[in-house]
Structures are given as C-alpha cells and as structure tokens.
Image 1 (cartoon, rainbow, N blue to C red):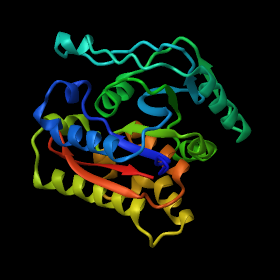
Image 2 (image 1 turned 120 degrees about the vertical axis):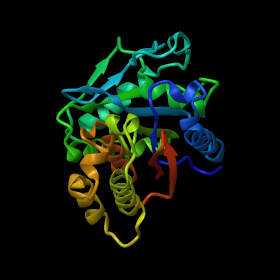
Image 3 (image 1 turned 90 degrees about the vertical axis):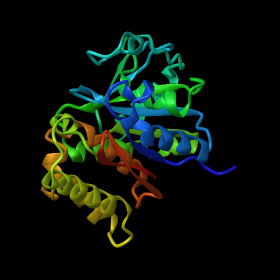
Image 4 (image 1 turned 120 degrees about the horizontal axis):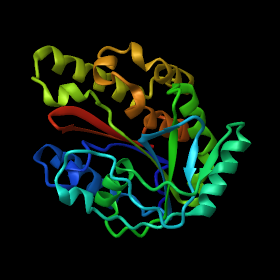
Length: 265
C-alpha cells in the first residue's frame, strides 16, 4: 500500500465561502477534492491552522471537539456547518511528547474546538468526518525558525499514517481581496508565488539553502504585499519542517481572483 504524504500545505480560502458555493473558490474546492482522492487515506490528521496562536505550541486534546465559527458577517447557514470528526487525545499526548523530546515546550488544551482553518478544508477533503483530528497552534512570536523546528519534531508521525496539514493561505492580503486589481498588484502577487514555488520545489537547493530562503521569506519580491502579517504563511514552514525535501507536488490556482498555491511533501 502506498504511503500517505508526510505533509500538505493548503490555501484554505476566505472563511466559510468555499462551503457556500462561492465562484471565487471553485478551483480551490476542486483541487482539495482531487488531492484527497489521489492520496491514501490517513489514519489521523494533525492540522496547523493560521487561526490559532498561543505563547507555546498547543494541541487540542478533546475527544469530541466542537467547531469554532470564528468568522463574522456571513449567512446564517455558515453558522450551522457541522463537521463531527473525533478528536484523538492519545495522539495529542504523543505529539506533545515529540515536541518535548525536541526541546520544545508545549501544552494540551482539553477545552478548545476546531476553527474554520480546520473544518472548512477537511469538510471538502474528507466529508465523512471519520478521520480523527488534532489541531496544533502557531506560536505567537511568528518566528519562521520556531515553526520549522516544530515540523522537524513531528517527522515520525508519517510512520503512523498521520498526515500533517498546514492550513493557511499562500496569499493573504485582505485589502487586496476586496480592492481593485492593478498591473502592479498582479506583478507582486505573481512574483511571490513564483518565489514560493521555486523555494518549495527546486532541486537546485540544498536543504540548508531551502530552509534559509524560508527563514528570510520576507525579503522576496512581493512578500509583504502578499503577507502584511505572516500567520497564513507559517503553516507552510511547519510542513517543510516535516518534509525536509523539495515538495513532491505543487498546485497553482486562483482563489478569490488571486494567484495561490498548495504543496505536498
């Protein structure tokens, strides 16, 4: 039986819009469904969402996690979405010990549920909600090195058929989503996407060079236009930490009329 990928960075779109039939998310929806069908089904999922930041890496450790509707101003139906996947407290405990073993102080949260960075893409990929899921927070210092190290500590999860998912967005400039598109804005968006794709996929870099590029991502052309704040990019750093190789597949697509991408390791 083929192995599952080690890690998958996905661009999760705008709030619940991918689940509401929004035209600007059609490519994203199709891409996530294609990927879920093209890889072996994981036994469990660890999802790092851009929408949870804590002082130290924190894991959900609840047996039946509720959903957190952490978005505002959407139709009533978006607050009725259900995704009753089981939690996996034993896996959360195991991941806690993996982080501790790598010298990374971590915590378990037995109360928190799953935010939309988790349940929106998972509802598209695995609508049966039958795969146990644990969520891992970002660290609120937003240091790239911290998040690569977190991923490195989790490399052995692959042997247990656990897929690490980084749920962020390769483009996350909220003003740009709702503002006018110009030649300059398109060029900045394209330049950063090209840089990111090259960084993640090129065989010409050593892993030390690839890590160095990701550590200093903000100097790339278009970086701060695409990410005024980096929380939606850092789940990719965790995925790279898990993978430690060039990505095996990349997916380029438009989401909400912006160039975006996803990466499998």
